[in-house]
Length: 188
Image (cartoon, rainbow, N blue to C red; front, top):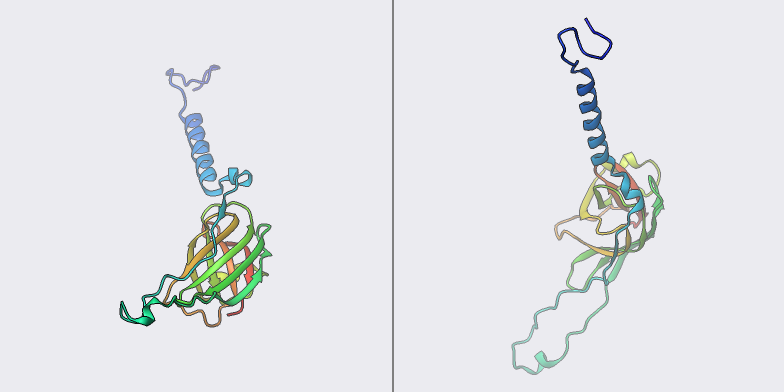
């Protein structure tokens, strides 16, 4: 039996309000962790220089006339390039897939501007840029690592063993919510 002051007849308080308050606090903490709403007001800018090929070893023995000649550097070859299309969040900038003289391949994002978000990554996929972002999990993709910053210029090395044949877009992907913030057509 309850009396008028919220206690039961034996003088003890009911545990129900404390349990409800604890559950509400737990749900609020999980919601803050998952959605990180403060990221709507934050930004991380990165300004990396374009990637350069690793210095090559001289092919002629040291001391020979050929070894004193400077190695001819060739610029990177553009394998594919395209502007970002907005998907789940407003996204702009350019994605360029480069092959350097040493054979390494890189994705370079320039003038990127997108929302800051939790668990963002850069992918190259075989799915067309734009449209329904749920398709990216259904196709083939190469994960290049976490997004370094949601604004600016950054480089992402493509693993040497990655097969880029048939890849068609670079995607800014949110792993936590399985959504594409934006994608750029690159057709490799």
